[in-house]
Length: 249
Length: 277
Image 1 (tube, one colour):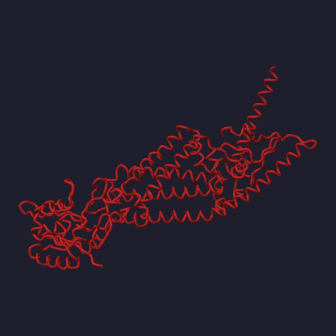
Image 2 (cartoon, each protein chain N blue to C red):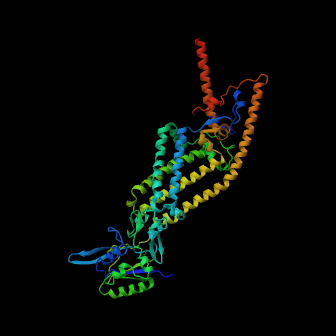
Image 3 (cartoon, each protein chain N blue to C red):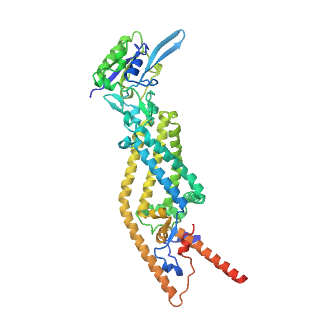
């Protein structure tokens, strides 16, 4: 597809063609492959467990939950799950992991424009946003934030796990502060994630793997156009193949 | 509010270990756990040597680092003393690291340290170490009275120990153990400023409350915004759906009408929608 189109187009276009008329709402696009969904839910489960078992050490009203150290045991089991997430993602779907990483750290001019008007997206207006690809700029920032803070939270977490008795008072305080702040960032990212999931009713996509076609058009027009273009390309290739075979006969 | 304190007169301590034994037995401590440890200290160069005993124990800091870092409230202040509720201890070990005197230990996964024989005192008795000391190096009572006596003792030994001084009256918000020192605190390996470090305070009093606060704020903001934003999005989705359908109908009309021709663009038929992207 023409790249020029991507930058200049303001509103997404609807599909054209003979089959288009029969499309209403019954068509879905694959957004998350099974491996990606599994990795997502492992991350979600381990993160929630880590949050719930870490909170009692931060907020005294919940402190009683930590008595006896059972929350610490659960915290460490969940931490292993959390650290396995990137490994598992690479094993079950390395292309998906690579795409997610690459896309989350590359921002186009549309992305910067999108971020400038992010408050409109925040308030539930996706239609007038600059056209986005498979991931919108907010999702890219979200993923980039998760990736970066995961490093600091894992590093400090391992220090607190394996070397707490060698840190000294200041070392302990600094390590724990970096751990706390990393978790604060991740928790706010999670709250935002849940917020946008609710506002843009995105949960079914992560449960079934499919996104409704119209919603995809509205929010990720460039992505849908890419799919359409590649399908058109495929069709044309098939047609040419058939024509060539016909010619050979 | 009345606060209580120990008097520990290091000019009188003879290192006899009687307080250690009484504490171990009275508190029924396991064999390898001690709330008091006595160490012989020697200073100077032969033949000009001076000796004393370090009577190492919980000093019941007013501004106690262990209490500051304790996440569960297992360590807490009461009547000027630092007490322990082992039931709710999580065994995190923060207190072990934070204590400027290196006092708390973890025993079987729970914090273990001197609690000033709280039960004995409550029943009208005297802490085991105080009761046992044969040389009157230890006293226990109301902190004001203990301070008065400690000052008198310092004055009384000035002629023998010119550097004699009080320790604990103001250190770390006022300790629950007032020490009579024959020397400078440094010479006796006592920290000059045993307050929680700035980093510990920043961690406990700024970063942690701010983390909870900002999380709560995010929840509140998104909670309110979610209702409005969801409504907005549903509206735009409806509008988009309407335009989408209108466009499709228009195209269909074009196709079925006279002279209508396929635009030839790809769409999303069923069998292809599951294509990996």
